Length: 61
Image (tube, one colour):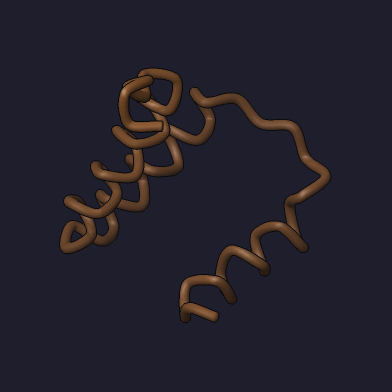
């Protein structure tokens, strides 16, 4: 188990039944980066990865 799994599990346990929009998530990510600028690059990479999930190259499968 990765260290980050504990945070992901807590998120799922506390908020797993909620419905959210990507607009809400984007605003929370912006707020997080404003408060923690040292995490700008990982948050940006996560956001880009989420945004491009459907763009996977069929040749990579």
